[in-house]
Image 1 (cartoon, rainbow, N blue to C red):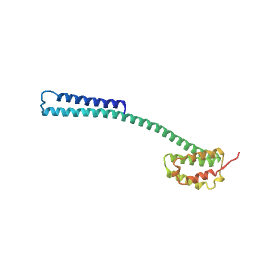
Image 2: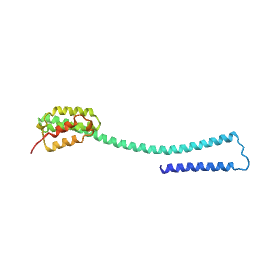
Image 3: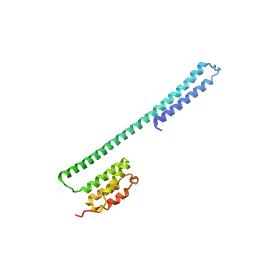
Image 4: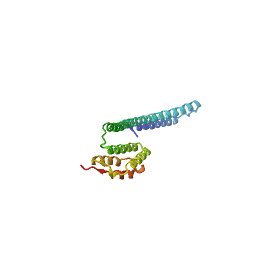
Length: 196
């Protein structure tokens, strides 16, 4: 319990104790007490008002703590939104870089790194699909890659390029839920390395 809550509880107990002591002192009086309906109703209503005020104080303290929790959650959501926007920007950047690279290769007729770019962009697509748990898309990309890369030994990448592809494919989340994931990793590990 917080300090404010403790204070409210103690004040409530003190108020109840003072009320009981006052009631006891009134009952000890020498002359007989005459009961009338007005007195009983006023006493009952007073007791109910005290209980309602105590309940309102407790609710207010609890409400303030709830507001603090909502503010913390709001801050967390803001941080997650910033992270999500950064991830989306990175995905857009990679997509545009890939498209730009394709157009460049069409214009210049340059076919260097074609195999690496194909593998890299597919593996990155699998990684992003796994981050949002889109397992169906992951399965489709892997099936297509396994259909395209029939003989991985014939593909030659630099050691650095092969390491990049293997690093990304080994860091895939939810890999145990993806069909043919192990086959793809085995296929990519068989890719040849260019010797300088």
